[in-house]
Length: 199
Image (cartoon, rainbow, N blue to C red):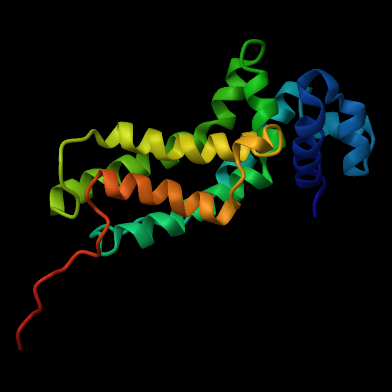
C-alpha cells in the first residue's frame, strides 16, 4: 500500500472512532505508520485529508444492480437490501460520526451520505420501473417507498446495538421482513409472469 493510500485508510479509521476533533494529524500519521511531515507532503491540511478519505470511502461502496426489467421484485430487492444492510453494519461507527458532525462540518456529512443518496435514487428508479411494467399495483409514491425501506434498514443497523430490545428478531429475518412489507404494500410480491415467446 502506498503512503497516500495508507493515510486515507488511517484517516477513515481514526475519524470513525474519534470524529474531526479527535482525529489529529499525529494520530492519523501514527495509524498510517508515517510521521506528520510525510502526511503534510501529501495533504495541505487535516480537513483536506479527511475530505479525500471520505470521498475515497464513498466511491468504493457498491451494491448489486437492480434489474432494468424487473422479474422477481422480492428476490431482487432482498439481494440489494442484504448487501446494503451489511455495509451499514460494517461502517456504522463511521456513519454515526459523519452524521454527528453535521452542524460543525456539513460538507463532510454531505460527502459521507452520498452513497445513501445514490442508493435512494437507484431504488426510486427501480420502483418507478415496477409501476411502469405493471409488476406493482396500487397507488403509492416510489420515493416514499424507497425512503421507507431504506429508513427501516438504516434504523435497524444503527439502533440494533444501542436498543436491542427493539430488535428481538434476527438480522437476516429483519431484512426479509422489511422487504416483504414493502413488496406487499406495492402489490409486487409475486414474480413477474411474462408471455412466452413462440418459436
